[in-house]
Length: 243
Image 1 (tube, rainbow, N blue to C red):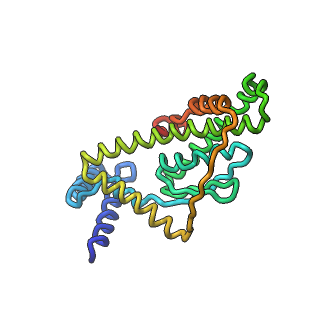
Image 2 (tube, helix red, strand yellow):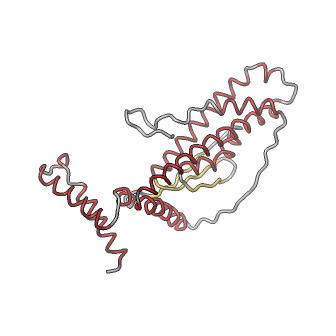
Image 3 (cartoon, one colour):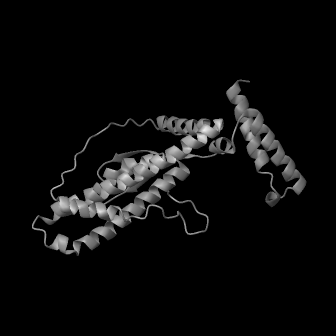
């Protein structure tokens, strides 16, 4: 048996032992014995429960349809969402954003995009009622396009800052635990291998933003600073926060 096959069997055994809990019908003595054995196997093989549980996570693909003029903003900040949520992604046509990665990460990215989409609709509607928009002599679409670019730029910078903070925290944890680095690499490898299995070939495209009204851009940036990016996912207590 090669080393990888042996390690896979060990991880399967750890998962089976970890499932032996009092809540699932085991006696307290059986649960304690299983927990002790889990700790022993983790120590012997230099594993963490995160590495073991990672094998159970499925890679999924989600497609989001973004319609209306606001899609220009979401497409602009899409790479920053992918970076924060550790997903792969691409655009398909004019309206669809496609996400790929571990299921919790894809769910987080989808939730975050919908939060931003709703915030943009709210902020733009409020901006349209303001004197800054009504009294502007430029064509309405030129003003709103500049507003959307300012919004997208500010939100993207906030997302990148959050990603930088998380990476710094992960680096600190990895310095304190050898298995931390292995877990990050294992996650990246799993997503990359799954993506290759899709047989999709992506090509990079470049785009430029034409800002005709710096004042509208600034108003959009201010609106992007008000988006609640740290809201919990779900309504129950103890749910994960985006930050």
